[in-house]
Length: 65
Image: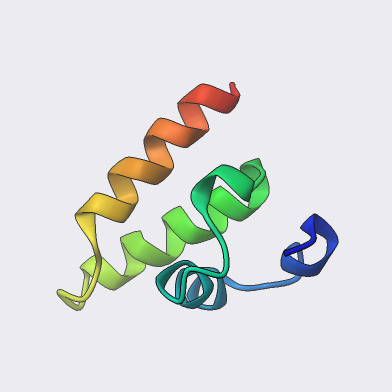
């Protein structure tokens, strides 16, 4: 998927594409990773968040810094 195409996606949409294996964390820039991280953090409040995704986002964000 083109970087320009996912820049407008919300965290839920990014997560869906990752689950469908149409997108990977390695393809995401800092802004998209942050959207996904924020989405997963919000989902933890309803016991629907994925701690593995949060950890992977945090690790990838560290790599990019």
